[in-house]
Length: 169
Image (cartoon, rainbow, N blue to C red; front, side, top):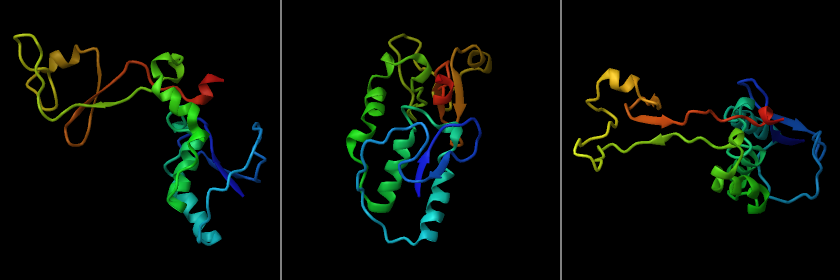
């Protein structure tokens, strides 16, 4: 069997199995030997089931988390070696040229702020970071969407969310 990862709209596994070189909608040009493993079939099946918990169909992203990212993680865990660099080259180039991509597939990143306060060029002093003394009304008026992590750090998100590959079709 061959295993892949694809997009769908549900928060369940996007990992699937098919007969080798027969995934519908794809043209296979070549096979690349990536290594071997000593796992039994049942151990391998358990491995795939465990890994599939990280690869839900609604988390698929053409640039940041695609089928080649899945394959790379499988290979690294089983053989200690990554997939050849050319396999996921387009996604890697897309991530470097994010600002040039259509907005619908741009990667929006969560930026973690430093634990220490930062200073602006103004005489006002501190910008709000982490545990700040900014009033609640000032925070509510902000144009940023904030996420607070369990340790109290604040991260900013861009206005528009990441769109999944299925939304592009």
